Image 1 (cartoon, rainbow, N blue to C red):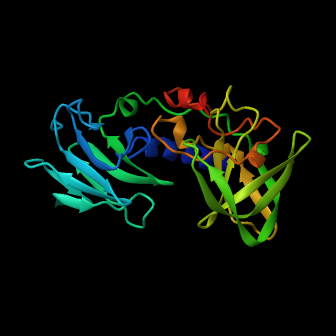
Image 2: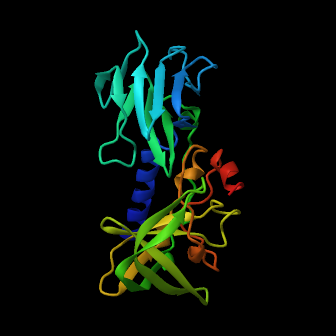
Image 3: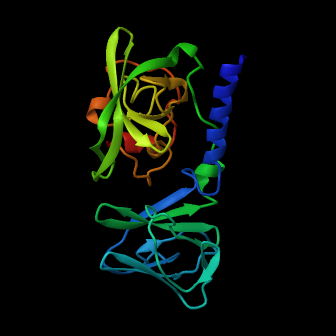
Amino acid sequence: MDAYEMSIESARGERAQMLLSDRSWLTLAGLDWLQPGENRLGRAPENDIVLPGEETPPFAGAFWLEGGQTMLKVASGVTMTANGQPVTELVMRPDNSPEPDFVELGELTMVLLERGRRFGIRLWDKANPARRLFTGLRWYPVRPEHRITAQFVAYDPQRQLPVIDVLGDETLRPFSGYVCFTWQGEACRLEAEARGEKLFFNFGDLTNGDATYGAGRFLYADRPDGDLVTLDFNLATNPFCAYTNYATCPLPPPQNRLPVRIEAGEMRFPAAGDMRASKI
């Protein structure tokens, strides 16, 4: 195994370890959208948000949604923490804020989601069966020929383009430009979203649905060196919806669906997320 192949295998191993962490896509165990007013939570089935775990109190408290603001009120006698500190009441900062609030109850962690005009509670469970049963990811063999040098065309100024997620919500995202390359004799083009110091490509290809995840895949690349960008499809990964039915991942823009098979990177994950792909 040469140095290049070793670097790819190392990155793939790191991704598998990330999925086994306490707050990962394999420990994601719920997503409940809040209704205006009181949203009760606990183990008892009559709660609006039913929490797992034998040690979870039948009634643990409530999330109150009023005027676009969500307040957590913890039930008497129940111990919860927010960002590691004990809490009885808290105005929740959502996941898209600079410092979101993570609320813990035993083995469970909750965060407030803001998606368009909707608010929801995302739940992680350290004892989630998907984590316990995880046996690894499946990848195409590493092939150096899938490391492609593409031409980069910058937008000046940067453009805001709409991106739709699996819930149907539309968000404007910053795009730096696009890349062009030829694969299997076909001209290909991908819009490049700006993600910090990286370019992000949310793309589909003709492997989707049979060998790879049905909705598409993700790929990050370094910013251009002059007018060239290196696209290493050996590092293409599944979107997080491949691992759980409780994710809200973005879909590839229509112009990022390639007319070729990219037989490189991560393959289908045999889990409940595949059922989500069939509905998209």
